[in-house]
Length: 100
Image 1 (cartoon, rainbow, N blue to C red):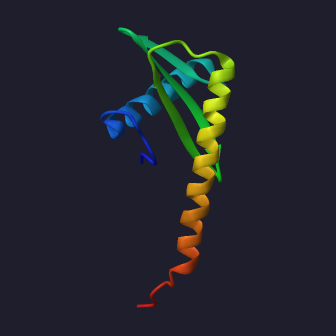
Image 2: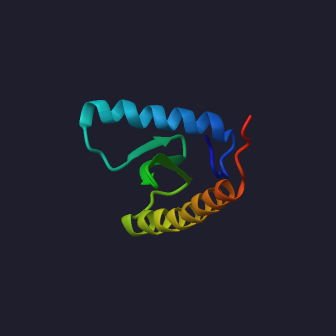
């Protein structure tokens, strides 16, 4: 499930990126990120656990990111996702369940 994206073909990229991350994780254990360089761009795949949900942050960039830039992007993405999860939780709490 893609929550938010600026990537072209986000569903396909998301599925592929999460599969790549899990595949690499099988061989190297506790990894923090996977970086793929193809043609003239980088793809960064970061795992993120938020509200007991396992998520992936996928970043495409024409330049290699510095650690400080990675952390800033992840911080901002986390802030947006926290708002998203809170809003979904509020909607679910406001919607009465139908007893059929």
